[in-house]
Amino acid sequence: MANWPIEKCFEELENIVSHLENETTTLEESLRLFELGMKLSQRCSSVLSNIEKKIQIIVETTKGQPALEDFSPDNEADS
Image (cartoon, rainbow, N blue to C red; front, top):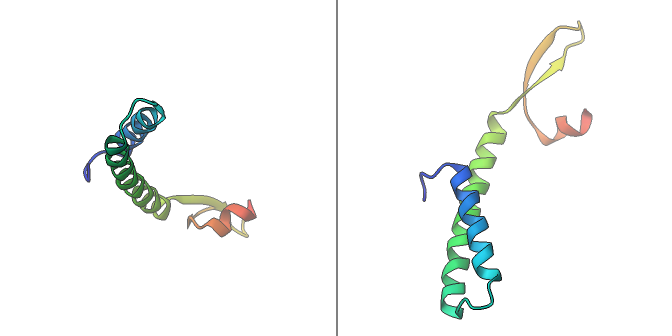
């Protein structure tokens, strides 16, 4: 799971939600799925956080030339 691509983690999270919504899932199985879901959620959050750090946004410089700038949530609000 630690090396799964993020798409696989999201797919597995969707499967877990489906199983948890199933009224026939036992309490023990629900707890096991919940714990797995939390681990997958943390993995997705970590991967997305790392991706966010790598994103660069093209911005206009004062001379009208494109430049690269590291992504930050503050930049998103300025757009």
